[in-house]
Image (cartoon, rainbow over all chains, first blue to last red; front, side, top):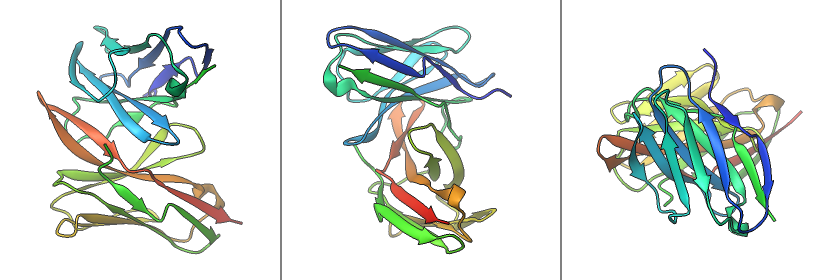
Length: 114
Length: 114
């Protein structure tokens, strides 16, 4: 099975712009979670989607949003970018997002905001 | 918010030695997982231990869990240069609506010197 893929892998944007990141989960996985990783804050949970519905959201401002399509692919969007949004954005997929499941991570999208 | 805290933050050993990393967490869990991350890349799942298990092995990895002390340890035996990476523990946290999110510690950076 192909693993989790994320596009693009690298991105450079300027303050005030918006950005859309994409994640394709492992085939058959219906839960997709997004995480932000920075040197200062570590890995922080953004949100989780299951069957096109956002089930859970972390403590991030409304500038961070996401969606999931019927084929389970997910996108996250960050509007009005700030310098502090520079980070590695990781998505992870699992069959149903249950506690007994392993989450499989993609390689990440590294976003640099100038 | 950080649930798990790894100790030490950084560890440097010679190839062939054993490496031990510890993780402490705050609230009750269903499972605890360990992940590895090579420099700036995605996370690779290593092992999952459930709350009713005390020890688990996978190849050169040995994980223990002490729920009374809310702590876990990861032992890598006969380390290799390729084990150089950051290691994270992650605990499940119920978020409502059937959704669980992973809460990560800040990681232990392991350097194995050839």
